[in-house]
Image 1 (tube, rainbow, N blue to C red):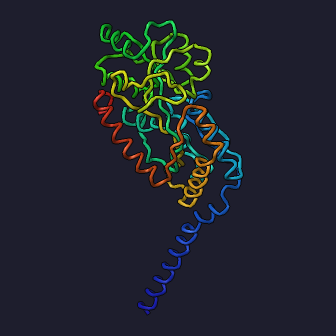
Image 2 (cartoon, rainbow, N blue to C red):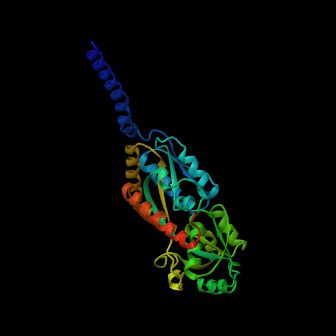
Length: 327
């Protein structure tokens, strides 16, 4: 009797376990089969008008074509990208909230501005890489970064440099300081648009800008460009020398990709990755991204994860050398 009762209990337990596990194992595939069935929100954790916003509006526009559903950009600024990222991190993991990220996620964590990093999300795809320009107001006396370095050596800590604290725009002047053995006075601004306005108004001496964010300012000569952070000169602005050409051994880019909340079903991540790969390969996307002075640099999910790991390690080393690493 006891043996028979034990057997019945074991069978019931096995049935319940199977009943509980089977729907969850199939739910991701079932959700992906119907995905997407409504509008998707792409959270951009910066103000409208910056380069991250401009690039991701193109991503959203092209992704709509591939998925057959609206992809709505939602700007959630504040905390150098931290507030919008937190909002996306807390969203449902059903594939209907995407987050646009770049290297600032690791930068904020490593400098103590946030308590989360890349892998508190599910990485989907890397989309673009953007090198930066060092800009100043045309009324300032420098015509090159060599001039800036010479002046900074004579006046340590006096030349101001706009940056979003905890973002990649803080890393760039830190790298220049280390490479050139100089010291800036780094002034915090929340987002690219505010930094650019400060440079144009000459409220700060220097600031980093991409072609995307600074295009209008450059066209009407409200900015003077002193250097470029790429390995080679930009095809868009071939007259601007690289930092390396000017004796500053710095190469630095903002790498922009898409992530989703943790534990989003693998089948949905895969579907998004496939759609984003088609976006990256489309002629219209390539043309629009090139017009912003940005490079398409697609990496699928597995390659993107490895890229993020390596990027985080390299950034940690750079921040340690610059004295910015949160101990």
